[in-house]
Amino acid sequence: MASIEKRTASDGSTSYRVKIRLRGCPVQSATFPSLSKARQWATQTEAAIREGRYFQTAEGKRHTLAEAIERYEREKLGTMRAKDARKQHLDYWRAELGTLTLADITPAIIKERLARLADEPSQRTGKLRSASTLNHYRQALASVLTEAVKNWEWLDASPMVKVGKKTEPRGRVRFLSDDERERLLTACKESSNPDLYLAVLLSLTTGGRQAETMGATWKQVDLSRATLQLEETKNGTRRALHLTVPVLELLRERAKVRRIDTDLLFPSKVNPRQPVDLRQPWEKALQAADIKDFHWHDLRHTFASYAAMSGATLPELAALLGHKTLAMVQRYAHLSPAHTAKIAERVAAQMVQA
Image (cartoon, rainbow, N blue to C red; front, top):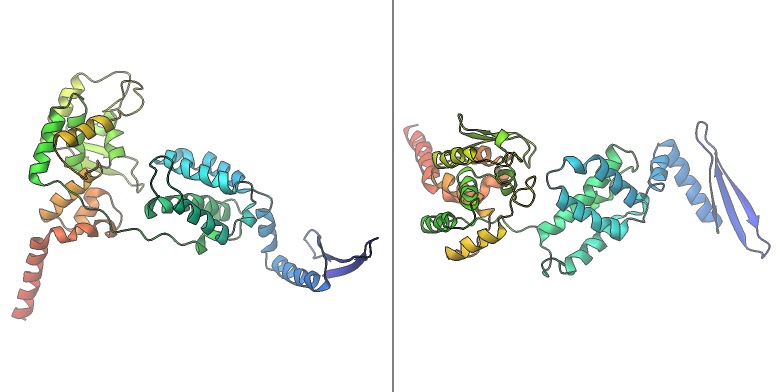
């Protein structure tokens, strides 16, 4: 039960001290300048204690966001594929809101910081951040707060449920024409970098993500079965990439002279434990081939686009690219009109016969 004690200070000011005593719970107390606020707090707090909500809120007042981020990095970040990018996003939240307790992290504060982030140019590029980038910042904080709710019991509910995602533009579909493909492969083959041609050909013929192909190891390669086994993918599922004959031949040649101080297919000369950095030779090859507005990830789009135009269904595309749902491959649906036309003709023929 709640009791309210009126107190008068030496200067004549009045305050009201509330004490709540419930069996099995520690005594809770607070002081207010007015009787109405004291009664309101007593009613709300007693109800929260009876419903089991109060002490979870109190727990949120004992831990700062910085503490939560540090625990998240210690327990979760080490197993994450894109941990460098996630750490960058977490560092932002630590600097902006790290001193606040979890109970003080409100949707309004988060929205204000995201709005400020959207208005500030990136220090790296000098450009405003895209909706996709802002969503990555949002997701980083959401992941920490979700852990605080579900696994640590530091919060009753995450404020992120009231912070919506930014609307992102439709997925980009830029793929090489036949002529562009030939020019690019020729430029890569003529590059002074010995890794560029095989790396590009591997990405182009498998649809693998850049991190998946550049971080590949010899242990993942099965030359007899012509596969590159991906154990850790972006979606957390295993997937095997088929190695075409040209890629197999180059890999067999490379296996004869592979380095013994690393298991990577494309190791860096500076640090053999890290994949080689192909940014400069890649840019030079694009320039030599006179190809505009094309990124490494577009090699994956090229593979998917050619597969769609060859008649691959959306489920088949999803399996080839390692997507769990069809939403991500829907962008390629318009590239296979002949294939869908055949299906429509078969359906129409059955209807006419009926």
